[in-house]
Image 1: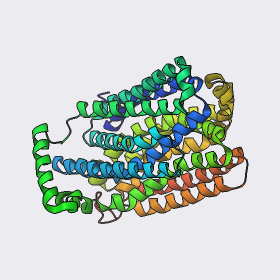
Image 2: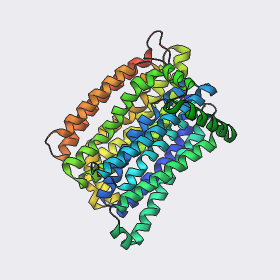
Image 3: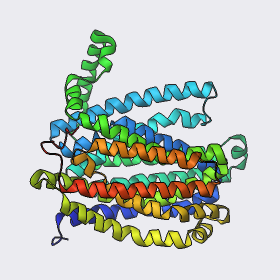
Image 4: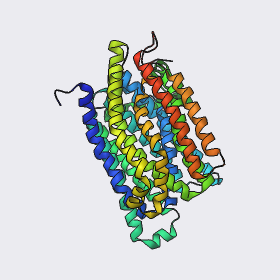
Length: 450
């Protein structure tokens, strides 16, 4: 390890923890599919997709600023901004969902309605904390936190599902009991991962005494200023202006990307039924595991290295090429295996009822391979000041997704059209990211590109 370049040393540290974290949901998945129905998995996946979108909005994408602006005081401001935005979003989202549920405008269960905002708040906190770890080379601590989160989710979900299986009289009285058990397990894992990350890292947060003093100050400010006290503080507003490119361009781009990721599931549920949604949800669950963990490991290292190389040399070609080689090596063989044998593999591992999910995975294997490669490399758009270009690409992707799944076709043909269109756009994305890795916009600073 000592003889390796920094990029590879950091990557192997993150990758070791991520491989362990990745194994946990994959090992748990065959048990989960035998303890819940496709409909219950589909209901949980819709809730989780909404959490993913809400968490993006909750951070305002300010966790990106955590890496490019690593001063301790500045990072404390970043934590404060995200705490303010995520708390308000969680409160407003919960109130809106309760009202919608009372009016029968949404079909989410009451546990899902009451916990969606909390899950988004926990996810936003985890994302910001991991960004802090990346900015200070705390890759080992971040890897441990990921393992705790993945283990907490898998263990809690299996435990709750097994308990329901042993109490059939309770399951008969509760609607969508399996989906709510998966939901509760997700919350347990998120909370465990966030607590572990904050205990392992020395975050630039105020101590308990200072927090209590600040709370007293805030209460006096609330009494004096009224509703104006609910807005960000003056330093937080200056921080938001300084890093305006992230909430002006990166945030809408990320929201579109998150929406595109969940839109197929929502449309499939509406057009083809809950069983089809459950099959598609398992496909996403299995194929997204290596993307969300392995690719995220590469991204954590690539963030730090690309920023450093841009600051020192004006481009990040070495980091880009390192990351590209690693992603190709990690993704090629699994993608080929899925493309050739996924229907039989899914039927063997998850049960015969889930063979249809394997057929969808076979269609989408090339798309997930390109997604695995392009995802981490997309950070180039932020450090090179090209957020506007990324936003335009996300708009094109959103339109492609809607067109593919809105077409009056069978489920497999909808998925095939989606896979082809998305893959072509990813090829354009990779070309642009490599081009921008060579040089950033003249005169643009990394943290205020707009």
